[in-house]
Amino acid sequence: MESNIYALIGYTASIIIAISMTMSSIVKFRIINLIGAVLFCTYGFIIGAMPVAILNGFIAGVDMYYLANIFSKKEVFETMQVRNDNKYMKRFLEFYHDDIQRFFPGFVHRPEKNTHSFFILRDMAVTGLFLGRRVNENTLQVALDYVIAEYRDFKNGRFVFHRLKNEMIADGFTRVVTKGHTPQHQKYLRKLGFKPSCNEQFELKLL
Image (cartoon, rainbow, N blue to C red; front, side, top):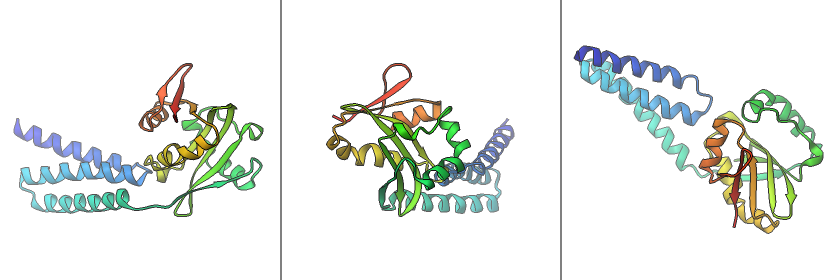
């Protein structure tokens, strides 16, 4: 019975490590890989395979080191406003078209409707694109809030909807609305403080 449990721990650790290798996000890779390494380390100690335990203990330590660096790093966030006919933005939308459709199915760029268009920069690297429009005096409707895979750690979203909050209020906005296009997108919105409203819409009150 015990040997079956030990084998189960080993197989589970192997599966988790394999899953971590499929992650495009560095943060997700490190977190999932850490879980797998801790399980493998435990498995190694249980069965008396010290090389396995020591190696995976080392890997777990490396994962924790890099995660600590990632979450403690002071990054510089900026916005770069762009015109709706900006050529780089058009190329960006073309290049990431398939990935954008995963999170915003059916999205079509309608330049004439956007009143707020900007790239999000992290340490001068382009990490995302925000497109929105004013639908009335106090409401900003988000058409696209896309973050490239390597930077999906919620920092872009916190920057846009929390650190830029005062700028939005100064522009006259008291609420931000968007559609929860997919379960992943809905999870993202909830984590940023959006609440479900009506007709699949999510709302963030700024005041």
